[in-house]
Amino acid sequence: MDSRRILHLDMDAFFASVEIRDDPSLAGKPVIIGNNPRGVVSAASYEARKYGVRSAMPVMRAKKLCPHGVFLSGHGRRYGEVSREIMAVVHDFSPLVEQTSVDEAYVDLTGLARLHGTPLAIARAMKARIRQETGLTASVGIAPNKYLAKVASDLDKPDGIYIVDPEMVEAFLSTLAIDKVPGIGPKTQAMLARYQVRFAGDIRRFPLEFWKERFGEKGGEFLWRRGCGVSDSPVCPDFEPKSSGAENTFEADVSDPEVLKAWLLHQAERVGRDLRKDGYFGRTVTLKVKSADFTVKTRSLSLPEPVCDTQSLFEAAARLLAAMALPAKVRLIGLSVSNFSRGSRQLSLFEEPGGGRRQRLDSTLDAILDRFGKSAVIRGRLFDFASKRGQGR
Image 1 (cartoon, rainbow, N blue to C red):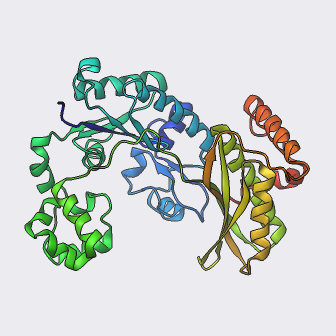
Image 2 (cartoon, rainbow, N blue to C red):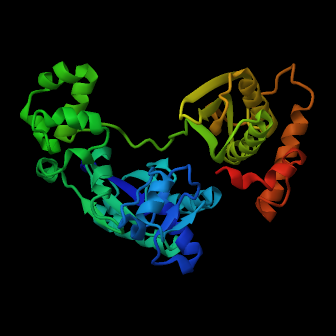
């Protein structure tokens, strides 16, 4: 029986790379996705990373580190389109593909040697196909499990392949810095430093019970398994997203509830369209509000029936907003949907009038936007808002 082989695919600086591919004049420049001074960096090209710019870094910090950088707002829908092209290629190599984000996926290669060759041959062929069809590069890690494959994919970037064979696991872990281990954050690293644990393999210097006494039953076992390089997590091809959302940070704090409601309608359009495109319905709507002092409030509402139409999502979010004690100044607002189901929604005997019209309206708008672009048609309620939308990203 073939030993287990898991491949982790990680696109290189994905958002920035798509922007550079679509606009070749950006090649060689430090491209940074994130243009709101009050927001954070979504992605940075490798030229920008040389200056210390990283994703999740405040944009203002990035501008200090790289003042000559090219700061872009980003194009989420475009990234989604390219992601689907990439995943179509990946699925040609194995039926067992688990996409974990727009630019990452696990692939189970076990038993594919006769069909596609060695794991190395598969990795090379997959990377070549992706580059040929999208013009983008990917980095790949191959190992006996998902945990080690993910770590490996980050060790030879960009455009690299790193393989951890089963007989290499112990030696690999003995040189793997503890801050490279997924799931072990700064606080845990600080605690481990007390016991001179600098590498993942150092965890094995102490017995399992030692770690359970200090980190609890689950936490101790998690650490021990990380130190041993053990993970039984399967590649789940039926992985379903748990939520879909949109949020915007304002360039200037907002205090007008009507402006906040306009943003919620804009977000409901974005989220609803994504749900409809992927065939999902959501039952739980969540509102997120961040005040000027960075205090975050969230409120959720579970609907009687799962929905995907823009108006229903907006009305639920607006109800949550009306019931919330709003801060004097709002820095960020967001809308998300969870508790998903798929397929056709079963209509209720007591369906509210207009439910069918809402769905027909959304279907018509989706078709127009798909054909003519996102600015081809604007809801009347958002007509004035559209010209001011640059105030939040």
